[in-house]
Amino acid sequence: MDSMKRCLMLAQVLIGSAASASHRCVFMHGLGMPNSSAPTEIDTDDYWGGDSNIIRLTPFCSSRTYIHQDTVTRAWDNAEMHKAVCEAALGEGSNDTVIRDTVLFAHSMGNLIFADALRQKACSLDASSYFVAISAPWYGSKASQVLEESCSNSSLGEAFHWLANKLHRCDPDRPGKVFHAYESLHPAYPPFEGLAEFAAEQVSFAMCGHSPYGLTSVYSAAMEGLARAIGFGEKSDGMVALSSCLLPGKAYDTHWQSEFYSAGINHVDGTLRSGDGSLGLPSRQPSKWVSSLFTRHSETVLV
View: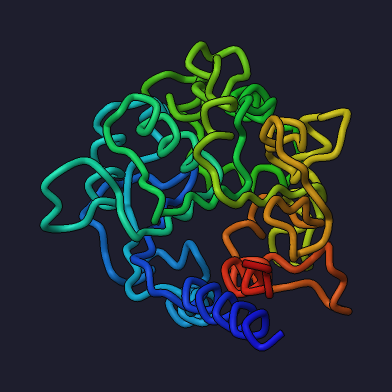
């Protein structure tokens, strides 16, 4: 019995150590960022809710690197973008293309960029690294078609156009057309073929939203307006249909303790800037989900 207790205690110590181990953390934003610049150690665009927010939510990070790439004029399968994302994930001093001891967070189109970089072998993940996919449109989004229509149609509503303008969607050099990044989100865009199946082998944790209104914020009304304009015909986060976000072969649950989480949030809430939902409902806790990604796995196991 004493030997059994010692084994159990050892298992707890080992798993607890793994949960508290420090990783480099790298953050890749999604659609709508108009400029490229060098990675920074601070959330200069407040895309992820600002430094204090992310530091609080990621106690497992020894450092934080924020990628800044043009996700307006370039499609997600752009090789130059793949290179930039891999270089940031690899870090300074890397002498090969294997990403080690790193947690890669991606939101929205950022997931497509990183997954395709892995698929094209611009870099690779080893067993010590994790890919956290948030609000990913693995099969594209009907939003691309509606956003293109909005470039020549001003009758879609004030809230809709407020959000659409923030996304920098219309290409001034091609009147009535969206920028290339938006075109690449069309479900018929050829590089989508096989991407979700490949990503399912790479992603460690994933969160998808199924509520356009989401957590009450300045974006709630706009996301609801966008969802109505698009007419998904199913649950969505306002920008991406739930079925497009779910990875094949993964079991999703509506509780924040799930590795694959279907949450009552909208697309913007996936950036973690809106915090958690009120009343502690387990389906509305995106920040809690992130902060406990590793600690919730420090359970007792038999060895």
